[in-house]
Length: 471
Image 1 (cartoon, rainbow, N blue to C red):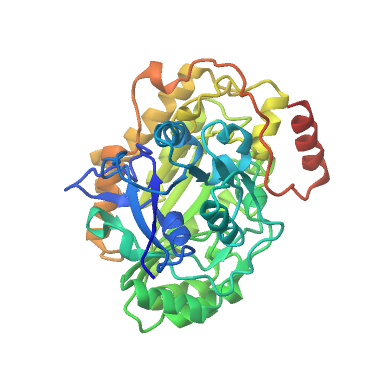
Image 2 (spheres, rainbow, N blue to C red):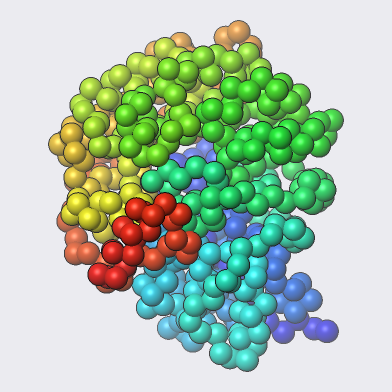
């Protein structure tokens, strides 16, 4: 049967260092793993798929298509809305998905004909049926979460792979055991892990033919036994892989031995803060700052680079937090550090707490990228917050720091180390303009954020319900 319909999937421009083509026309990471998975849900025999990542190429608004699908996170959802408005003005139906619109679907429906809330796998058949009948409309949300069994292989062939350093994203699980207050994972995908069959994972890796793999899980080491089973399946396949893991289980010598043997070259770890009290306040109790240095040293012994993620702006942070964190990171010889500013993403527990305290200043979604100040920090002035953030980044990626942290002993791959540090050094700070970095006050949003999944903790459920009823 001839293909009669065309669907245009679009990732709006995010303008982050990870997605900008900073060197030789290449971006560090491809941001379209979700869209490749969505494309796999659309029957090839009935639809042509066009995929556009606006970070690396312009959008052709004149394409003759039957539907446009747009995925957007908070920091670039406004651009997503602009794109949606432009296509709808031409009479093209638009459906939106992604984290931001899953929490604010009524906002998105001002710009789109329909919104997918949460996971797309169990609702895509209905979306396509309604598209064919000309009745695409409203909110599509599954009443259950996908089992992760039998997921189709993402359409990697749609990707312009020559434009990215890292593009082989593979998801082995969804969900996370931890309930960090600043994270959307618990109320988007749940506090329990759902696992893909290992045979399905290996089949996907063989299909995409990428030897460098990024495990797109919230916490790959979250269940050690399961992680070990996956890594055993990776052994002997010539893979180089990286993943996000938690700091507690990353101490496990059994996990690290298998990680090294199976090709792990980097682990990303959300250390967040060097303050125990701060970590307790944000429900990140699995972290122990006293063990951070030992963990970095241990990972280096296994030849694994450490990307340490740290956040500023927590309650209790004082001006000294910046220099203390910087000196600690340099002395511990973190390979890379990503420094971010606490951002109350709509629908997170942190969002509802700050709303209750009237602490949020700006609701300009363009500024919700963890690189702009959108709220009043408790122990810092906006000026201290702004300057401390820039000084920390500059200090860590200074020539002196990089010389001190370089893997002179050969324990980690020097080329990989240099590539990642070059990207972070050149593009890690979105703006240095004080007027841009400190977001200006705006009115509150028209619609209340509603989590796709309610939090399990009773006090948090009450907090959410109170805010959403008022909204």
